[in-house]
Image (cartoon, rainbow, N blue to C red; front, side, top):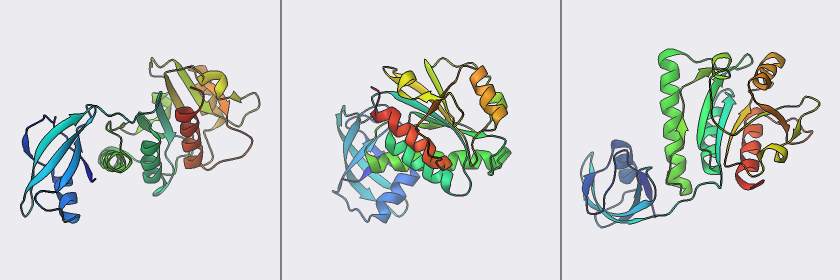
Length: 239
């Protein structure tokens, strides 16, 4: 059944006009009055709904029963990633959402190829947030992960944080297996670098600010692969 995200809170029995993006999607699918759909507002669970009217640019639906269904990962994993270049960041946001990421922090690091600031950074953030919404619609999640504004690594890494476990991907000697840090944790902040990884200075700065250096093995992974491998390990293993 087609699933659509609504920005405003939903209630059983409401007759509402879908947000523009969802309305366009309904029209692209050529759904007709009487068609059954699923709606979610990000506050938990999902709602049955029925298309009542199709206008030229608007779609009205009747909200039905609420179902307290959650499909979240067993622990909250917050991913901070040095942005990979080109469309790879789009792909990373999509797949991280499917894997159950709780939030995504795009970072500008010394080796980041994609340099963003000002209006361009804000537009990219909105673009990535829309990708996260679409991924939730596709994969069945009812809670949309937050894509934070692009941040400079040097400022972000020293900011206070209250997550119990903070880990950084590293190929340096002495890095320990992920399970040694994450097993039993309810929430984890996972840091991964861009193409070429974090610089030695950035990695040292992360370690000085409470991050533990971890390894997933001896292979050198692409930036987006490393982030997703780390996320998959945290959302599936070491419970």
